[in-house]
Structure formats: structure tokens, C-alpha cells
Length: 336
Image 1 (cartoon, rainbow, N blue to C red):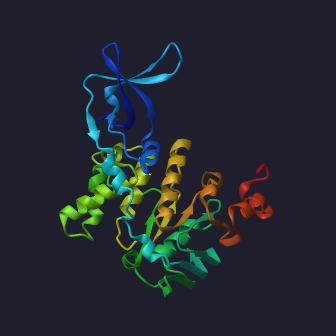
Image 2: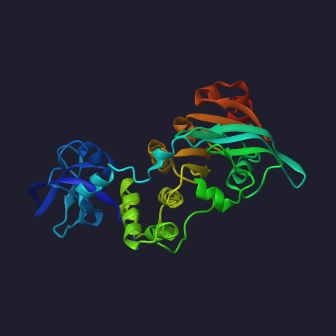
Image 3: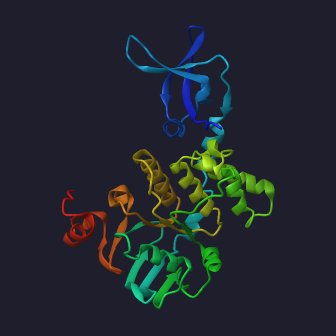
């Protein structure tokens, strides 16, 4: 089944070969932002692109969109504008919840993987966990979430020692992980994937459906509601996967393991804006990625691991200028 993409346009009653011309084409996000503080023009609609033909004018060599006679309005922009005003997650009430890793060490199969690691994820921040393959990033994530347990050291979340707790207990306290190669139920729609998690926490079906609409509407992903997971693009799949993780009503801290892997540059840019919006509503985010340049401009702080130890920590600017970071991670040809 061919996926639908929603466009927006101002409709002007002018005929071109018995069809209406569409001008002032903008993307969905820009138009919503433009109209947040103003009254929405009643002539603005959301349209399915199958009802529009893209053409170039001879006079100005500009692209226009010609509306087919059988067009239909499929959404009301006013409803989406109202959804965006809410903090539907109520995450800011958990603003004091920090994650602290204190002198953690872990060996696997007799081989030391992490050696006396310490780091802090402050509330409402995006912190990068950087390092080459085999440096221990995924092992640290597994320790934080409760898949494995440390040999030494402490994991403290919201002033509580949690490194001996089971995975589900840590989840209920507000920790969630999106692993690199795991995500959604492929044969289920985006709506069904969110429903599967929300029904664990909410008993009223109408309330669940309202929450799904609010989640998708807040991030302008409503057009994916009935799309099956295995038909989503890579970027769309990652976004819905993250939404599924934050269906946990106690969520305050999200771990993202290589979220930008295998995505094209435009999808990475869109996903980063999505992650920044998560921070803006109050989530704390610990993120790993092999490609430092893909995420460095959204990080508040970063830790660079080499051979299971912290090589350097600090702002992205500090990491970019650090001689050891350039020598062992960024590469000798790196230039700012």
C-alpha cells in the first residue's frame, strides 16, 4: 500500500485548465508555527498529495501545485494547533530526577569492558556517550537499564541506588531504552504499537485513544496512525519507536542506542529535531552514536570512552578541540 504524505497549501480561486491553483506551499511544521500566534486562515487545508499535480510555470520557472477537481480535506489544522499547547507527558514535574554512574566496572567472559566509569545525566539535558566499536557503550546502557549488573560501583537514579533492581522495576521508576536493532511490532500499525504499551498503564480505552492522538499530534505524526510499522521509513520508524518508549507514564530518562544508524542525512536532521523537542518537554536523554558529527550540535555534554575508560568529558566544543579525542576518536584529519 502506498504511503500518504500530507501537504499544506493556501487555495486561491483561480482556474488553470479548469483546475484550482495552489500557491504559498509550505511544509506542515512551518505553517503550524506561523499560525500558532494568529488566527488560522479558513482557506488553509491539509491535503493528500494524490489530489495535487506538481507543475512548473513558464513565466517564472517556479514550481506550483495544481489541485485536481476531486480533492478532499482530510484534517482540520485548528485541532492540531490546540494539541500542541499541552505538555501531554507532564515530564517537567520530574525535573529533579538525575542519573549518576559512580565508579562502575564490568567484565564479561573474563575480559574487562568498563573500568571505573563515572558520569552524570542531569535533568532535561542531552548527553552523548561517544566511542569506537567495542569501547563499552552498549555494556554501560545494559547496566543502566538492568540487563546485567555491575561488578563494582553504583547506579543512582533520583537519589536512589538502583543497580540491584530488575529491569521492570527500573522502568516503572522512569528509565527507558531504545536499542539500536529493536523497535516496533512490524505487522501492527503505529496506533496499535502505541496502544500495546498504553493499555498496560491505562484501563479506559477512550483515554488510551485520546493519548495516542495527542502523542502523534504533538509531533505532527498523525498521518502515520494507520500505517504498519514495516512500511514506515527509517526516520518514521525511529520516531514511533521512541513514542512507544515514552508511553510509560513515569518516563523521565530515555537511553537511545545509535538512533541515527542507517539513516540518510535528511532523516537524521528530522530525528534530531524530534529528540531536541523531547528535551524541551523535560526528558533527560543519554545518546550513543558512532558518528559524532551527526549529533554533536544537539548535545549539552559528552563523554568519550576508550578501552572502557573515560578519555575526555565536557561540552561538544571541548571534545572537538581535545588532542586525545582527535587522536583516538575523531581522527587526525578532523577540522573544526
